Image (cartoon, rainbow, N blue to C red):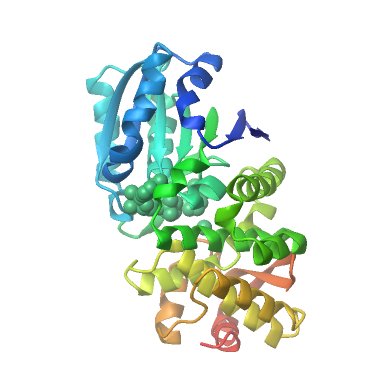
Length: 351
Ligand code: NAD
Ligand code: MG
């Protein structure tokens, strides 16, 4: 078992090992959490793993309820969030009880936000079930729901009490979701480690889940330790995300987040090379890695549509867009780009 300790405003462990779901109850008991657990999940994940999660909890002496909602990003909204809170009230959950977020990033973000706000905060455990949520969204305490005006527009920082990562749950993950998770993994390599990119080139992620998840969580731990509340270096994790979000939004969210990020990383790296900010050999390395994992690197959406969608992105402060720009594999920096230069950047990126 790999244990990674996260030193944030609440300290907690991320534990990683195949088969760990059966130990959910004993680990919750070790944390000294209250007697009742509410499992929050989506219909698809709960059908696969709900019974095992609940058995692990009841075997350890917990009383368990569950709240389910239909899978998909469209459900990560105020209405579902309100339903979770009302469910907790109906069942008379108190602040000494806890939530278990069993699912991908949608479940984790929504259940985390409910945990943060129900009676001003109850503990919660993240049990991520997608590759993306294991390497990224379950760690670091960003919780949110989407508003009609955009993704993650309502939310807060609220750290879990434990992240229980069981890579054997990934056996049922659809291929496309697996690939989307690999985009975020390639992102970590581009940000922090050329050696890690080489590992990903040599050995497929699915042959080394525990190792890859551990490396990524270790990188995220360092970022969160230095900048939990996203005032500085945590912004680097947005590599490929400004353009990625815009492309996702242009597609009406038929593109997965990781697919948008793959396209976004390719475009920003091409632009950085064009502008002389990035070593030329970085681009073919990135493109080869993305293609190896079957990820897209180009888009047909017109520049004007992507610009309009990027304008709406919340990471824009005043008249500056903060692009995360690779300088070489393993090193990136924040580049504030004035509004009137963004189009030029995207053109340089091949749009
Ligand atoms: P998701 O939660 O929608 O899961 C993707 C699909 O896979 C769903 O249909 C789900 O039912 C299904 N699924 C999940 N686990 C499965 C399994 N083991 N077997 C079979 N099917 C399974 O999507 P995601 O990619 O995990 O998360 C995306 C969300 O995460 C977005 O809302 C994004 O904003 C958020 N996010 C948050 C952070 C953060 O720091 N909080 C970081 C990155 C992304
Ligand atoms: Mg992301």
